[in-house]
Image 1 (cartoon, helix red, strand yellow):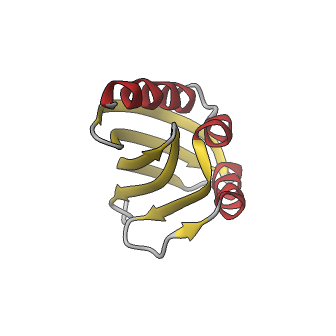
Image 2 (image 1 turned 90 degrees about the vertical axis):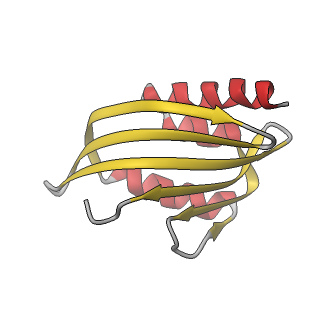
Length: 120
């Protein structure tokens, strides 16, 4: 089971590295997806999370760096560790070291939580 999830995680991460995050979202995320940033309240449902993701990616001018440091798969869960350096359209820059924790069901992500330092 974790081998299958490792392959799915690898495919999802390859799309992210290629700058195709919304394609990854449509392909790998369940209709009842729950997404959460750190300890913020979770956002439930694919439509609400799609709008949130589109707003985030729409604010980006360019990715200056995307690096996948590593990933792991276990029983129904995967983890990926990332470094992002992002230039936003408003001139701000973000530097994030992030871990994405994903829970899977039937080949789709049903829960994703991002852990990062929001002060950077």
